Length: 167
Image 1 (tube, rainbow, N blue to C red):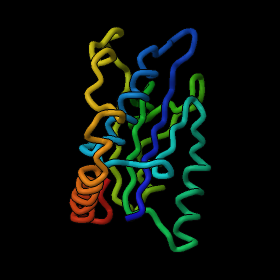
Image 2: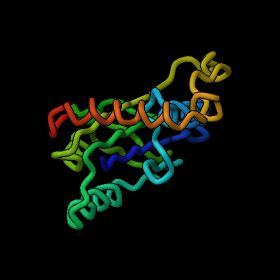
Image 3: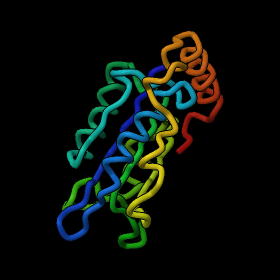
């Protein structure tokens, strides 16, 4: 199964900093790299730290289709400023940058099973999850390759059971 995880982080700026986004990066990666999170490996994910370019993202998806190796499943995780603009749900992928509507992302991912996670506008500056990591890629279970690959196969089986145009 060809799948890809995109983690897009906006750490905020001097006026509106988002100090916990650095923890979000670690927590999401540890979860998705764990067996329970689907055992995503190097090459199956990309992390953008205040550097996401929507045009390049859309072109990447189009290129994968052109070479007949389209993504079957995408997980798109966004951490940072988000909200509503002109009646649409939007995210701000770069500090001080413009916004992108969820509809634009949905259109770019048309025909691909897509899970979109918007982790926006955190309200607890010192969340306790920062100190207690639930999934750690260095645990004994992740070292058990058989267990991890079994979880990955099961994860992919459930993903394939979802309709192709799910967002």
